[in-house]
Length: 186
Image (cartoon, rainbow, N blue to C red):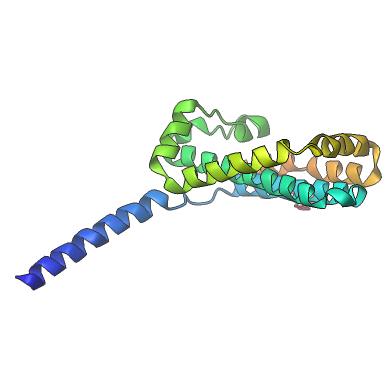
């Protein structure tokens, strides 16, 4: 009898564990999205390195700002993959770059993803905390001003030039053609 109860409890435990794992399992990767989000992250890293060269004394804030921007990109990916799983028709693939990357996201979507994912809620809380830390720092405006003033800098222009190929790369992947050579820098 005890053995039957043990097996029954083991079966219940494994069933619950499998359900929890399935609820938190990542969706399959989308090549166009991954190309886009990796490009976004690389651009953020490049801009933050450029600002760090000019504002040595704010390196901790610049690092926190970079971590925040990368976390925002990760959050957008979580939202994208949530829609891919729960409402794929809202991911527009045949109307160009902007329609694809600027998918509609509602408060209802936010509530549903948060209700279904403890990991998402934990990450959201950490993201909110990091945002407050960065934007609440009195030197945050200095970083934004420096980045704006660097817009005429050759290194800044080079980063911008690299990004201009990203939309073309995304659209090419969406069309099933792969990444064009001039867009493969990312």
